[in-house]
Length: 545
Image (cartoon, rainbow, N blue to C red; front, top):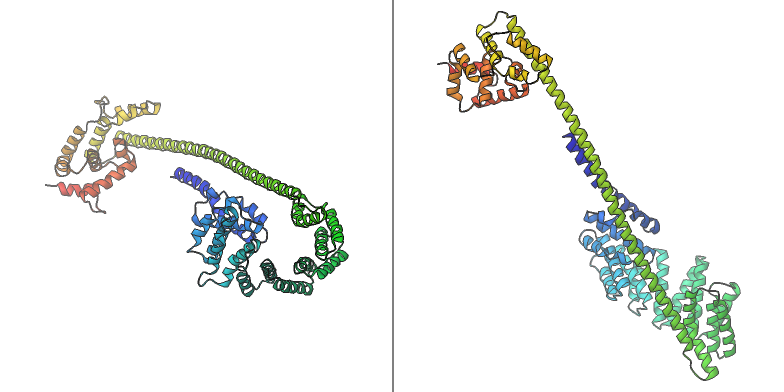
C-alpha cells in the first residue's frame, strides 16, 4: 500500500505541479496588462496553452493575451482563439464577454480586413441593459478605427456618446480630437475649427505645451484648407520663430509653400518648398515617403506652370518607393511569422524532449522505489518466517520437554500428544530443514517412543484415537457437520479438544497462528457458536447422544 501511495503521489505531483501555478500566473498577468503590457506578456509566456486542461483557464489565457497585444498596438495572427474566450464568457461573465467579443471583432478587422467588424462593435455597445461602463470599451474601439477609416458622419454619434458617458478626462480630450477629425474629413471645416480651437484653449489652460503645439500645427492646415491663407501663413511663421529646427519643420515650410502658391506668390512658394525638401533630407526613408506624398501634387502643378506639360516620372518614383516599402514590410512580416513558427516548433520539440526525460526519470525513480519496496517486503517476509520458525521450534521443544518430564495431567491428552509427535507432520516439517537444531529436535522426538520410526501423519489414525479417547467425538462431529466443515477445520477442532494451544496447533498443522485464528472464527460462524462460549464445549454438548 505504501508503494502504491508513493506511485500515485509521484504521478499526481507531475500532473498537478504546473496546473497549480497557472491561476497565479494568469492573475498576475491580468493585473499588469494595462500598465505594463510587456512584462505581462513575458509572464504569460511561462504558460504553454496546450497544458491548460480547464476551459475557464483557457478562456482567461486567450483573453489576457489578446488584451496585451491590443495594448501594445494591434492584435496578432496567433490571437485567433480570442473567439474561444468570447464563446466561453458569452453567458457567464458579461464584463469579459463584452471585452473578448470586442477583441474578436478587432481581430476580424485587423487580420481579414472585414468591415463588418465595425458593425459588430455597434451591436456590442447597443446590448439592451448593458451598463455604460461596459459599453465604453467597444465604443472606443469603434470610434478609433472609424476615425482611421474616415467613416464620415457615422462616427460622430459614437464619439458624442463617449463624451457623454466617459468621465475620464484624458480620454475625453482624445474624443474631441476624433470629433475634430470627423468634421474635417466630412467637409465641415467651420465645425472642425471650432472643436480644434476648444482643444487649443484647453491645452493652454492645462499648460500642456506639447498638446498646444500639436493642435496649433493642425490648425495651419485647417486654415489653409478653408482659404484663410494669411492666418495660416502667420501661424506657420509663429512656429518657425518659437521653435526653429523642430521635428516637423519640413511640413511647416510645406504649408507655407502651399499658402504662398494659393496666394499667387509662385516664386516664394518654390523657395519654401526647397526649404521643406532641405529639412526633409534628415528624416527617415519611411517618413520621407509620407512627406513626398503631400509635396508631389504641388511640385507637379509648379512644374506644369513652368514647362506647360505634365510628367508622371515623379509619381512613378513615389509609387515605386511606396511599393518597395510595402514589399519590404510584407517580407519582414512573413519572415517574422516564419521565425515565430520555427520558434514554436523548437519550443514544442524541447517540450517533448523534456517530457520524455521527465517520464524516464519518473520511471527510473518509480522502478527504484518499487524494487526498494519489494526488497523491504521480502526482508520482512523472511524475518516473519524466521520468527515463526523459531516460535514453532520453541513450541515443539516445550511439547517434547513436557512429554519427557510429565506432570500430573489428563492421561488422554498425554497419549494424543505422543501420537501427534510420532504420527503428525512434525517429523517431516523438521526434517525438510536439516539444520543441527532440527536434527537435535528429531532425536528428541524419536526418544519419546522408540516404536516409531518417524512415520508421516495419518489423520485417519488420529481421528480414531480421538474417537477412542473421547467416546466417538470425531465420528459424531463428522456425521453432524461434515458437510459444513473443511478437513483443516475438523483437524483444528479435534486438536482443540485434545487440549492443544493455538500455537501448538499451528506447529502441528504447519500453519501460522493467524491462520488458526481465522479458521476458528470460520468454525464459530458456520456452526453458530455463541461469541462467549468455548467451541469444544459447544460441540461436546451438541454431539452428546
